Image 1 (cartoon, helix red, strand yellow):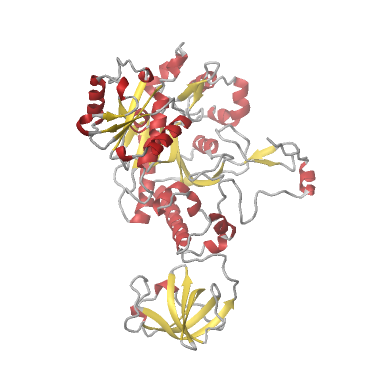
Image 2 (cartoon, one colour):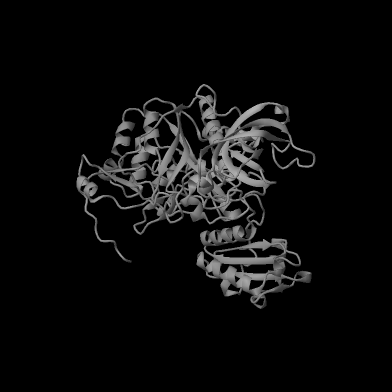
Length: 583
């Protein structure tokens, strides 16, 4: 090969019957070598586009994952050797010349996905794992999503603006990652949990429509849909209503779905927070399956059964669940208790509506008949019932519903849902101050603003917010709200939360000061790109769509982060480490 010629003329996975007769050069990794006689070997060469079979004379020096350049003639595979499972299965390269560009040690695991590999091994050798079809596919899906989101936001008149990564620490619900300042010893930056305050400042600055594919960082426990650092589509717009924000984001999400699946999203259904909780026991309901919560409180309004003398009684009907073993029922009961229930009542439905249950003898005939009619239960079904305060009942049954009915991520299609009318406050603290369900800049619902002046703290819990979430298959993709832009409402909100003027100035002064100079009405939204990509790619864990993720413990097996730093660096920063606590 001379410097004037390209190293490759084609990619491995792009060659087809229409290329027969061409002499081509392809580059990649040796995926497989199969001996054919004394001298010939079949080499499957792999790059990011796929595989091509190469017939090589004298391939004894080639090993798995060697990096090579192969030049040969595209020809039809011999009769009977065509591989219909391979995009290049009609052709092969013959009369091959091989140039070894780099040798390789045997890989730490097979790359053909026929063998399940421990995740820690994969992450420790992520640079090898990235060569697999799965990771190549997922990361390219991610790139498509990012590109489609940018185009959709650009087309709607949004301006992409980068906000800072080193900011002041602000209370946003999770722990900050902090960065010590060398130039200001004893002072710290925080890494942004979101660009929330800066995007609101953009509105004050007349940007009108802002967006960013933003990196956010939160020091919170990890799980399947959460990492320390994550990417979100962040957007804010001036002089808009909630309806317009939902429209903007729906257009962007629809573009991503279309780009990846080729399907049209259509109208996204909508549900209030209250309805979602009552029907599904969750504010992020998975609507791909039924098994909705059934209201049973009226059925047992006059019950003599002490366990059912509660303010709320709800149940689940599990079709065919009567076959559950006693050990499984005991396990479900234990789970319900761990999730906060006082207990779990189970009832197997027999012929003629008879109930097999340890508590059946405590129920009247009318209660049993009403239970069967209300639930629609038939022979072979299982009823699961929880009695307690309404929030606890909904929460526990919502978790049981997912435990028993949630289908795999690849089944049931993409079920998007807007959840609206969230409560402004989630509870009262010990001093009867309301605890915000969102950040303290969320605008109350116009019909409920008067309740903020009530003398009864319980009225605060009735106030709805102009906040909204986008849910997909039971995952919260993101949330947003109409922001408070009026000083009187913001001051009242701080007062309700027990935040003094001095505290508000200390924590949010730069935003409040900006609002004094003409803040337009504005609203926004942000959703997690990692979560959207995972569901579009059919993955249950966002680690599978992130190039270099952390484990669930926050460890990076590849770089061994987090790690200690040199004492000289600590000295330069004016820091001294305390002994590690052994709790």
